[in-house]
Length: 291
Image (cartoon, rainbow, N blue to C red; front, side, top):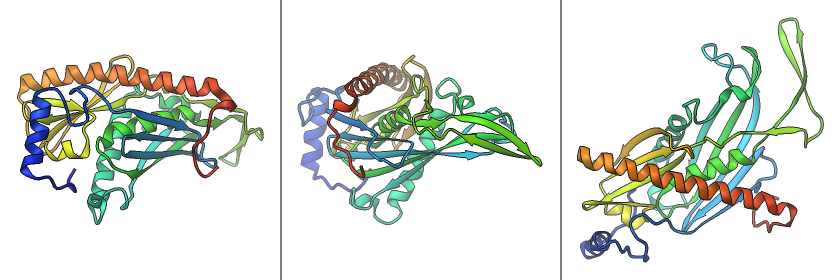
């Protein structure tokens, strides 16, 4: 991502650090920076999460709405991703830069989630061919410190894990139209199964090596990255490349294997963090806003 200007000396310093497997912040090539995740931070959303990965700050809210299934997929619900890149996050988001990146991120999420083995849209079906739930996943990038794809995917999975869908008590037909009766109890709802939802892992090529969780400065030194969507069952649901550079076929295969292994670890760490937060219940400290 453009926006940070580095001198040739700074770029050389970063490149040599990656070659020596000792990056500027002390990490090895395959280390992530510390993360903070918090769910249920937006009171008027069906589910929400905020993730901080160093200087990268992501807020995700999920809204539920009753809709009509697609004719070609009558037994499935719908899910749409919207990404808003705040112009305050980085100078690179000013003008159309943020809009183009937002479209790229939302398309990558849609592709990663389109596999039925990643997310079961049939769980959102209310009446076959008639009514279904539609999930609007709104993503706001508050601050950008590199590695947006990974951070957004983690925040999205956490928000979907936090989402509660109202239960339908009854449905009746009235002159060809469907009349649904939702439960009046706000606690009478069901949770989404996100156990197979993928996390994105970005492998950023700097020199002859790839690093995970690149900083904004490291991204400036790279001309190509591979982004791999991995589930906790080691299934790869999508792979795509960013940047103008290229990968040697053998290097690409090795990079994908590394991404798959890293993806397993990231999914496990996120799952453990979400379960730990739930176990704390009302005792957990809330740092969220809009409460």
